[in-house]
Picture (cartoon, rainbow, N blue to C red):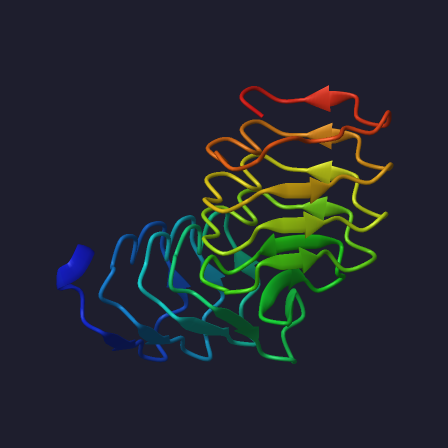
Length: 196
């Protein structure tokens, strides 16, 4: 089902407990998937560059690997079952349950600005990767780390407010953001990665 020949809708049977890495990568035709209630793991890049418009994470999921939903340009909403002990969603954005890490901002969410909630310490790897609508982001004062490729290839990204507690900016964080005119770095930043 790779690429545009993938079905538009998939319902996985209850026997499926893991979705392996790249299982649905580049399935641009896939609009909807029903994840089974016994699912425990979503692998790396499982739904990257996919056609999904929304996804609901069941309560059973314990692990969502890096880039599971990266650059799925139609993805507007990530919802997490309230009974899930490891993840939660707020305003369609995926976080860890403790609200310390912003895991994934849906690439197709059509807001032009976003304020990271207070309490978030880490902007996760590829968190905003490929966002096509965002123009500006304001980090909360609690953010200390912006991980690798967090804002990679955000085509309309113009500005970001980096607060005084940020200590680390990972590799390729703003790579490919051609509309980003300037970034003001606070004194707290002690590490800036390659191609940032």
